[in-house]
Length: 286
Image (cartoon, rainbow, N blue to C red):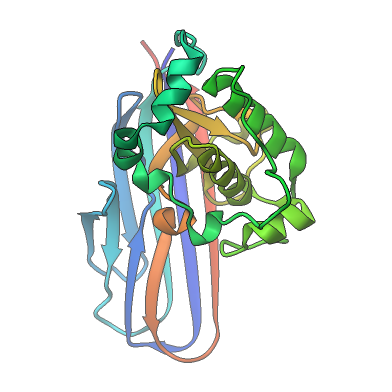
């Protein structure tokens, strides 16, 4: 049965001195797709600055805010309601020809078509090691290899907040073996791409009522392209396939393409920023 999800996103910003000019871009609106349908989208800010929407380079909706008056404090609040269909992540036909699938990954046209999600980025650069951290087994299907990579990433990193930030490199993640969802996802993307599988970083919301790992902000997972199946979601932070508790906002090559908030502030002095996200759900009445 479909579920209705309610999401509340809040961001509070306090500045030591007057801010005379500022620009923000929010990438927080849930994507509307075959499994997600809007009920309502609301966004406001505490100083009644004008909000406008735009589309980013990957086709996702953003909210832009450019206050015309000076301020020392501003808060933003968004409320989203959507209907999400039941999703069984294992509802597909297994790969019939494993050799053909692996050969497809090597075809020039395939690699050109998916070039953006095969490239190494700053945040998905693996350290130089004597041997690969994770090598695909060509006796198994691509899906089975990606599921094994999900298991490996989940086991290799321990979920711990406060020890990394959004710019932490993979060499530190691999050495220290602690991190949060974006770290798990960057490592998964890097290793899947190293094995020839197009993989994109996904940002969104996670309904944590089932004991999933996450934090008070937004969640991250990966989508990998399997030739015979299309894009399939993998959540290495929780060692599972993305399901109807995962609410997609956007995708890109890494966190930098999917940052929920970007801002340019013209002012001096210290500032404090906090973000919170609350996700709740209920069965939709038929």
